[in-house]
Amino acid sequence: MGFLNFINRRKKQGTEEMSFIDHLEELRWHLIRSVIAIGVGAIVVFMYVREIVHQVILAPAQDNFITYHWFCQLGRKLGMGDGLCMQGVQVSFLSTQLTGQFISSFTIAFVGGFIVAFPYIIWEFWRFVKPALSEKERKGTTGVIFWVSLLFFIGVFFGYFVLTPFMVNFYFSYSLSPLIEIKPTFGDYLENLIYTTVGIGVLFQMPLLVMILAKIGIVTGRFLRKYRRHAFVVIIIMAAIITPTTDPFSLVIVTIPLYVLFEASIILATRINKKTGVADERMELDGNVEMR
Image (cartoon, rainbow, N blue to C red; front, side):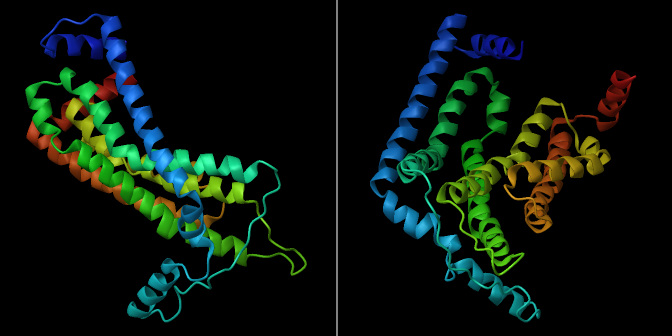
């Protein structure tokens, strides 16, 4: 029903009458162009896959990674001495399958192509959605492509420069016995890296999602403040899902920025409610009536 309503809005806002099949055909071409953009980015990444593996993918697992230096300097400036200094680790990975490295090359190319083409993908999606919006809604979403892309890349960089080094350092330093040698596979490391970069980038879209819901009138600042405790639990669950490891330390690292984004979402929703004149009290009352 939601998709049909969206199609109807595109018909009303559009200058030409289009059938349901025409809209699906248009959506198909938007998807095709997005896939082509990912493919082009993947080809470029694949051409330099060896350099990318050595200088980017494996960099957080090297003892000279820049994050170790940053956090050590930060700890000293905060008067913590070497409290934030992590001992860099020098590790090597196994490839236990004959086609393992070959398949990993395509995985790196596809994920890299997606990251590079992400702004274009959002732009294609926006081109499809735009005809369904009113003039007022279009003005209210000015710069949406920039902000979506910015939050995504901030999340990717946070996962790469902060979360991944912490996890690598923790797990390669943790040992139950000196007789146990840590030798993970490259595929396992690559999978974890993708989760902690692309996954965090997607989760960083929370403020924009709340902004859209606030503009539609589904959520308000008061509603978010009322269920702040519930949201905190949901954020922890989301962090546990997106974090490929189960140690509390990594969970805290992911939870903190997500909760900060939630608090920012409350401020954003409150400002939008004031501009749109949405009555928090009325929406809260309506919600209570529905619950009954």
